[in-house]
Structure formats: structure tokens, C-alpha cells
Image (tube, one colour):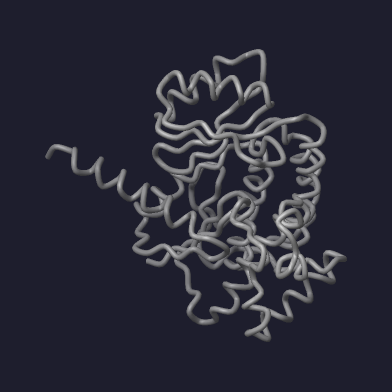
Length: 296
């Protein structure tokens, strides 16, 4: 069974999508449609902009969405997923390509999401950090024990890699403690704020109204959502999980495990970069190691 996965923020780069625009009439039409919907030429920023342009939230998230969706659409009949999943903002591309909502609605929601998240980031100085080489439960406990600042587990990316999110002092304190507890690395990320944490509550409330007003259809294949990591096809449940996603952790490890257990035999990453392919391999290795230790 073929599984398709869609990357999230951090995968962007200058020049992304330019080859699609130049070599596909379908892609060119969709890029021009996106320029009109957004009210600025995002295609110009994607193709020939600067690194600083690509870091702007109003550009970053729509750019990743556009590259992923347009790439999928140019695949034609070769794009036949049995299941899909997207990491953070990548979930919107997964939903559009699986037929749960239109390209236009997906782009508008992603743009709204980016703006709402930026406002939430501006309200409270905050950040994220990748913790490498510690068990999830150790990281979770350290975050829980820090009560004078907010810091939570935000992205369960793969075994041995968990991203924490919170106030700047909270993340800094957690990194120091986790390093003392044996983390191989604790790297503060260059992001605008504390995504997938309670600090995104103002953005969640703002986005909830827009999601509720958008028409969702039953996708033609299950989408494994970040909230819970389980497959869904019910539009109402999909909507609810999409609203929760901004303040809830991305359960990517659990998502990959569930997809594999449900029969995924191949994973194709649709969008910029190959980060998710690397995470899938680490999950597969962990599952293989665990099955090898089972006694019959």
C-alpha cells in the first residue's frame, strides 16, 4: 500500500517550485491562481526571493503548501495514495490532495493559519528546541517539572528526536536540564515561536472560526492526523483535529507506526526536501528492533 507524506515548516528553500512552474502548464496555472488568492506574487518570492523572504511566516507556510499540492497534482495518475499524512502545516496539503477540501480553501486556511500564528508569536517571546538522544518519557517529565515557565513536548518526530516548545526561559531551562540528563544534543531552533503549544491558543481560536466555515468532504483515502496519529475520513472529526493541531503535539512517530501497522509498504514524500523520509526510516528501524526482541 502506498503512503504519501507532506513536509512542514523548515523544508522551504529559495527556488522551490520553479521547475514545476516552467515545465508544467497545470503548475503554472495553480501558481498564478495562488498569487491572485493571496494578493501578492508568492511565486516570485519562492523562485527568486531571498532567504529572509522565505522565513516570513506569511510566505513560508503557503510556499510549502503550494509546492506540495502542485507537485502532487503534476503527478497525475501516478498519485494514487492508499493513505496520507502531513507534518504540521503539511497536513493541509495532505487534506487537499486526498480530496477533503479544495485547493483554494486549503490555501486560504494555510494563509490564515500563518497570520494567526505570527500574531500569537509576537504576543509572547517563545521558541522551540530539538532534543536528540533521550527517551520521550524523560523529556516529558522534565517539561512537566518546570512550573515557573511554560514548556511542553511539541513534535514527536521519531525515536530519539523530540521537539519541545515554550517560553524562551522555559525552553532554555529544559535544554540545560536535559543535557545534564544525557541528551546528545539540545538545539534551539530558528523559528518564530512556540508552535504546537498552549501559547498558540489565540491562533487556535482565530483559525477555528475559519475552519468551521470551510466545506470539508470525505477524503478518498484515510488521513492520519497529527492529533492522535490515527486515520480519519469523517469530515467533522478531521475539522476538530485540525483546530486542535495548533496547540497539540505533532504525533509523527505514532503516525508512522500506525501507517506501517495498517499496511503501508512504501512512503513517498511530496514537497520540498527529504526530511520525512529520514524520519520514516528511523521509525522503521525502531519497529524492527522491537519486533526482534519479542519472544514467542
